[in-house]
Image (cartoon, rainbow, N blue to C red; front, side, top):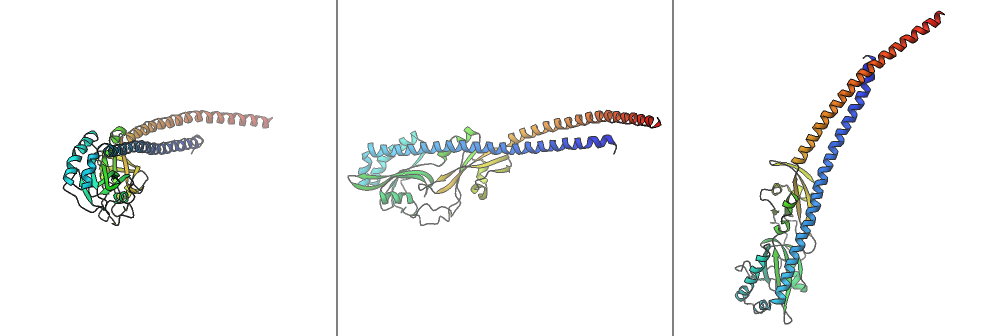
Length: 337
């Protein structure tokens, strides 16, 4: 290797190493950007979901208070245990509430002994003992204090608000209103540009209170999404239960999946999760374009720098060689003298 190449090679190696470090840093920053974006979406979704939940709770409590304060005609049939009369009185009220609040799906009168007296939404089913299946209602009967929260029932998971009913000092039972879980999702997914889903915990994992003596061994994971074709409907259980974010490749693209919150029952126990998924194809394509442009620019700069070094080092080496020759000649002349 001649002197010129020996002089240029270390400088070129330094430039290549710096370029490689730059591309590594760019890839790391892209990963951070993806992670930051999905977590920002999760935070925004969490706030929106909490707002939806607060609104659903307020609706149920307001309607219950209205029923107990202004519709005493419900109490008489309930006290006398006249189911058909209670149904005919309650149905128009329930229908009006549903027209105003479409997410309202349950209106249920419970007897103090734990049996169902009237499901206004399904009047043909009554008399079943719900002491074990509905621990929240059992606790309302026990201390005659209202409760609210997510709870499974014979019809599935609903956000439920239950209130004790008293008449002339007598405890009649409990009145419950229920909201469908998909109301929690609302238009959050469309607003944020993400897919969103509510998952219940896997079978066998849910036990809401000491009143619940069943192991729920037949409880399968249930899903509600803002899109029937959402990739969130086919996630493995390990991904659902992991709070960390995941990148998943599907037939419709690459997605980043992250947990946005938890579903808790009336006692505060976790009974499910809220997950969001964002398609990252556009972000990845933008990153690839950015990297391709910078790769071309870097290669061009390295080539230009190499050429400049080659030309300049060649001149410098020739000048050094000329100086050496001049010095050698002068030294030789001095020695002759």
